[in-house]
Every structure is written in structure tokens, then in C-alpha cells.
Image (cartoon, rainbow, N blue to C red; front, side):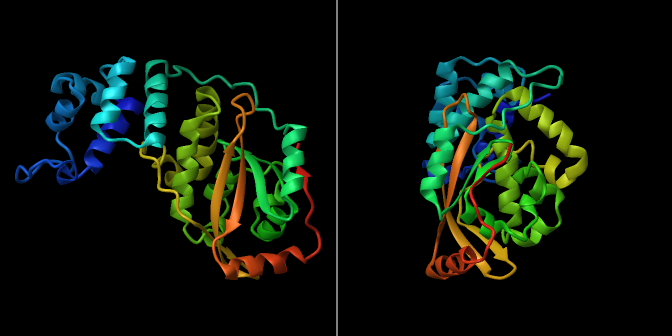
Length: 279
């Protein structure tokens, strides 16, 4: 049985073209990407040891080995953080599923005050499970009619995978689905994420479960929304990580073009949008 760490190393190695590292082609290969021997040489470890890591037979590589693998794969800063996280959970992964303490849905007063200052921008507070914990009136104006905010405790991940309207609302639904599934690897805790995945899987089906073993972070691209009254809206996204104890993020959607900015201004003039914290 593999580990998240081994799966990530193997997937990343398979995604690398040898010539991008200045390595010669060796003719036809049984699998795509970088050979194990190439990565082992770049990382300064033996092929046998790399094989054990990829197959999950070594679950506790030292920090220096993890760093060497990151260097050997030429990981960027985000990928290096993810590699260290996977090394941590692969060595001490949960062996059983017990319902964890529910995450607090409270948003600190100072964060709510920040949201007020952002009005009429499109912004919301979430966590890595996808819970929408608070939002601006601008966010409500844009999301109105999508179905996301129709439940007492809206959750973006659950909405993406279980509400048919999400496939129309998100122009690049597969991209958003990849992002939401990948975020579950990043917390708030291993136990909470595992429980959430086990609870959602029977409802979400194969589109969700087949994404759970993907270890490569999806690219962050502009978000495209098919709005029922404003047609396609395009957004850049900025994320502010709040203190670890909160396990929350402040996300701001910024219009990516003039057409979106003008459409959002029209949506804001519709009645009903106010700052809301969802308890």
C-alpha cells in the first residue's frame, strides 16, 4: 500500500520531461517522465531507497531526504510545503476514523471588521473543507441564484460535487473540482479532513473519489463564473491565510476584466446584499 508522500513523488516524477533537466532521452520508456535512477542521482539517494519511498515501504524519510527529493524534483515553494506536509502525515497517518471535534464556525470580530472594510468587494471567509463562514454583500450579490448560499451552513466543496447547478455556474468545473479536492490535503487537520472525505464520498461519487489520490497541486488560474443575469464573469483570486488556530482563509475575488467589473456593479445595485457571518 502506498502513502501520500510516495504517490506525490511518483506523480511528480512522471510529470517531468527529462530534457527539461538537461537529461538525454534513452529511447522508449515503460512509463513517462523522469526515470527513478535520474531522480535518485539528482537527490543523492539510492534507487532502492527511492523505490521504497514511492511504494510506501519507507514511511519516515528524514527531513534531509525530503529536502533532497524537493531539490531533485525542482519543486516550487508551494510544492515544497506540500511535500513536507505529506511526509508528516505519511509517517503518522490516521489508522482509524473517529468523528473529530467539529470545527468552529466562528469568525473573529477583527476578521468580520476586515470584511466590512472590503465592502462592496466580493470576499468571503472559508476553511480548507470549503465551509463558507462569512461573506460580504458583494459576494452574496454575485452568488445569488447559484444555489451555494441556499443552505444554512454552505460548503463550497459539497456544492461543487453534489449540486448539479455547480457544473453550469463554474465555467471550468473540472478545475474548481480539482482545487477543492486538493485543498482537503491541507487541513485543517488530518482527522477532520479524513472524516469529511469519508462523509462526502458516498454523496459525491467517482468525480470526487478519483481526485482524492491526486498529489500534484492544480494550477491556479482565473475563475470563470456563468452568471444567469451577467453572463460570464472572470476573476483573479487573492487568499490571505489566517492564523493556524483559526484554520481559515480570507478570499477576495477581483474582476479580471472591465466587462466583469461593470457586471458586478450592476449586480450590487440589486437589493438584498449585506455582510453575513454564518454561525
